[in-house]
Amino acid sequence: MIRSASRLHTVVRWPPLHGRISHTLVPITMPTMQQMPKLYKELVKAKLAGLVALTAMCGYAMAPGAAALSTLFYTTVGTTLCIGSANAINQWIETPYDAQMLRTRNRVLGRRQLSQFHAFGFGVLTGTAGVSMLAAMVNPLTAALGAANIVLYTAIYTPMKRASIVNTWAGAVVGAIPPMMGWAAVTNSLDPGAWVLGAILYAWQFPHFNALAWNLRADYSKAGYRMMAVTDPKLNARVSLRYSLAMVPLCLSLPYLGITTPLFALDSTVINAALIWGAVKFWRNRYLDSNQAAESVIFKC
Image (cartoon, rainbow, N blue to C red; front, side, top):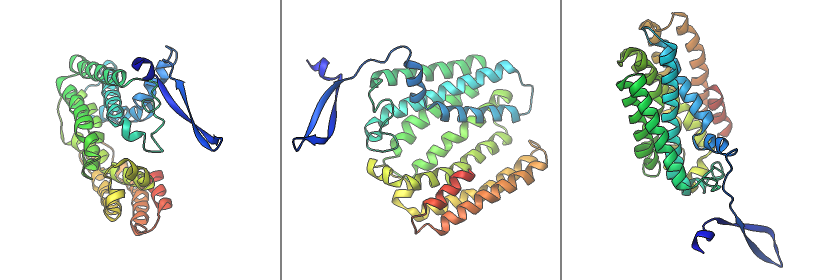
């Protein structure tokens, strides 16, 4: 009886019948094999994972030294597996909180189309496969960075979201590591160029995420997440502007180090100027319901 009840969920009928809310138990069916790829794509946040893997590929392409397509392939696949692992375990941890947010309540675990055990097991499996592939087919340094990022995302950033606004800085480190992994895959070292690429991704995430979080602040507050947009809107806008300004010298350091051509200095300055202008508008309107200003920063990111 207990086993049967665990496979049911309640549907509330509205408008209520005879003046009372009607609850109907509907069985939850096991997903078919044809449905599994789509569910796994949702579990690992495939679009986001693809974009993060692209930053690792960029780090690989920009690193000095002999590059091989086979190494690029293993680096990309291994990094993607690590990203998928972190995202799956993150969703496993945050399922009860995701259910409270409009943006996330319809995720695959919230819909109970995959079990908690299944999601956690999948995360462990993909993480082990990703780190093992990087260690065996690329180099130990890249594997260590991949393993560290899984731990940082799932064991530090994820629980910290409900404890302190410092979670945003921890999360930015997670986003900064993949291009460094791509660089390390070529050089087996972390030269100044790797640190600059990581710093650019680290700084960029603040105007992007803080503007996004401002538009979602009601949802974050409802779920109990300690985001700057919820606890300190002034700091949220100020940090966005601060790191937008930091993008200029970071990008200018790339041609200085010989990683890009001098033309990149001009190209990046134009783009960063647009980002800074959006961040300035966001900062000026920090006392208002400045969703439009926040959206301009998101767009420029």
